[in-house]
Amino acid sequence: MIDIPRLVVAAPASGTGKTTVTTGLMAAFAQRGLRVSPHKVGPDYIDPGYHALATGRPGRNLDAYMCGPELVGPLFAHGARGCELAVVEGVMGLYDGASGQGELASTAQVAKLLRAPVVLVVDASSQSRSVAALVHGFASFDPQVRIGGVILNKVGSDRHEALLRDALEEAGMPVLGALRRAEGVATPSRHLGLVPVAERHGDAADAVAGMAAAVRRGCDLDALLALARTAGPLHEEPWDPAEALASAAGSPSVPGSSVLGSPSVAGSSVLGSPSVRAGGAGRPRPVIAVAGGPAFSFLYAEHPELLAAAGAEVVVLDPLRDERLPEGTAGLVIGGGFPEVYVGELAANEPLRAAVAGLAASGAPVAAECAGLLYLARSLDGRPMCGVVPGDARMSGRLTLGYRDAVAVSDSALAVTGTRMRGHEFHRTVLEPGAGSSPAWGFRGAERRVEGFVRGGVHASYLHTHWAGAAGVAERFVVASAAAAGAAGAAGRGGG
Image (cartoon, rainbow, N blue to C red; front, side, top):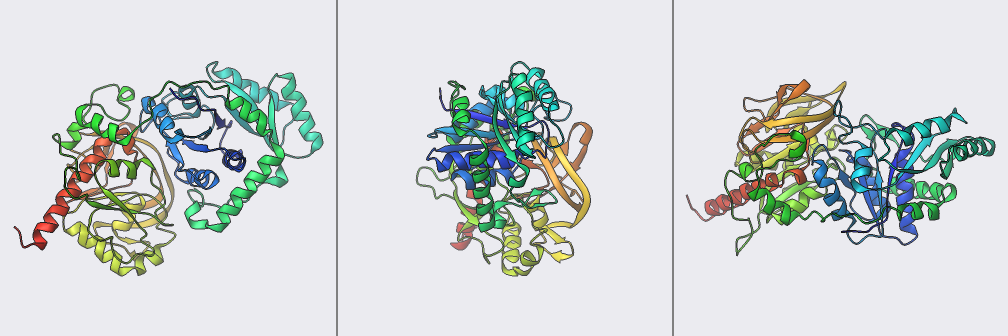
């Protein structure tokens, strides 16, 4: 059981200023000396970066689609351990979730799973008394969702604020804050949303400070904290990466197996057979490089935690600055990000591109998602990349976005054929061809197609996955890395 005050910050729709308000709340409470645990509903990578800057703690995602509803509480408890307040930013509108699947992966579902009160951020521009009808509709739509108050955003004047407050008072809904239009904090956007913190450095810190100042001026922090304290105890055992690996080794379940509705292969099936943990009992820990820096800033916090728990030594690699792989690299993970923004710098770093190509050619495991796939391609927007994947990538005007129900169609360093996982696509690039002779995934449902590449130890795909929902993936990758390290050592000693 954990008993941490908590709030879920939601909105009627995207574009209301939810991220600004949430980040400002996190920073304002942290400035009061509270240890604040930051969370984000859904697959978003960018908002958690701002949350981390506001709180000094890793921003963590709560995704009921990719990890299953049963892991939302444990992952929350893992992130909130030792904190005095948790603030959860919602996704899209309060009741929006996985397309065509009811409340699954919605902010409302996460709020119910966490038994947390909801603060609704409402864009009050161009309305007055109608705000009460809007809020009443959201508060009454699902009686199990408890909306504890409203923060009004983009308020025009004192008179406008008075009209809004009167209407909401009549409806019996507390107003916990009001932010003026002039107090909007500039957070530059790009083709996939806000510009990540890793790219903005000092500007991002200034923006977060501005958000905190606006929230302090316009919100009743004492009332918000009092609301958070009404959440009550949550009967959840915190997620633990080592325990997740042990469970995966002995269980036939998949991420969100209760959601999928039928037994599938993962865990021990992903591994093929129970394995000895890499790095244990006198065995060396394989070095796994994880791409980071401004071009590759998309990675769930639990991924390196799982890799380390499985026996790896995790070392961060910045492909914009580092000209060689970390000493002894036996495996490489390249997550998402914006290589298209840094294509010139990535192309110019020829020594690292050659080193990545050499690692892949050696058979060592390389896992690449989205941006990582582009980096492994022959070219991106006409500039040379690593040449590991036989495809050429370019920017596109079309946004590919949505959850995917995937099945592995080729054995790889991540999964055996038939493994089912759930993931998310989010990109404005096109890779031609989009799949190799041994594709990585086949998508089920409306998105029925194959995608990605499996070549030797390389698994490259547009699909983002959350390994907390399938810890056996991390274990399989570390075991493959340990084998690659052993083979390299034997070759260096003149072995067979």
